[in-house]
Amino acid sequence: MLREGVPEVTFYGFTKDNNKRATDQREAFTQACLDAVTLLSQKDATLFIVGNTHSKAFPPELLPFANQRISFGRGGIHVNFLVNYDWEWDMKMIQETGSIASAEIPRVDLIIRWGGRQRLSGFLPVQSVYADFYTLDALWPDFCDQHFHDAMDWFQSCDVTLGG
Image (cartoon, rainbow, N blue to C red; front, side, top):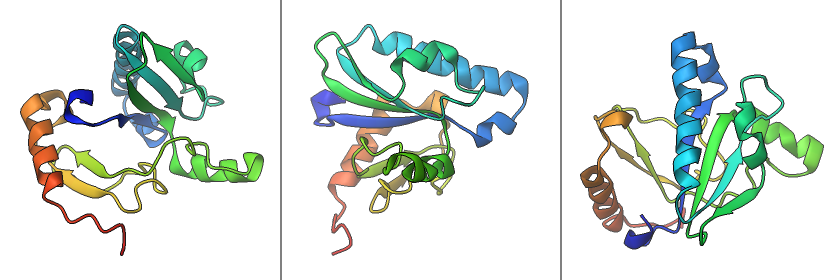
């Protein structure tokens, strides 16, 4: 992605609401998050994990990476990872800290949404205020390089006005 000029990406690992799903699905979400961090730790990347670390649903193995930027290798692409994230929790942090918990994540330009869905599902509501949606019918496990390039080509053709 860095080669294509994308300096920062944000992935939704799993939401607080995903914890309502069947145990095998919750375990799969958690394992996918752990695997992703293991993979990133072998790359030139900077990782920032945001999520409710006080919840028992937050994977304890990811606590050392939570709420701080951790660089692997030479840094490189910035990867934001939402783990056990909840938009209401994010907003309520203003009362405790004076800022939303995800304040270090910049405004989102493009949201690539899989499975034909056209909703935020609580994804960074503040940062997504002017985001454009690119929707795929394919599901996340089937996402490939061509889908990414198609989304980038589509986004390049958009008239980004930021509300103006």
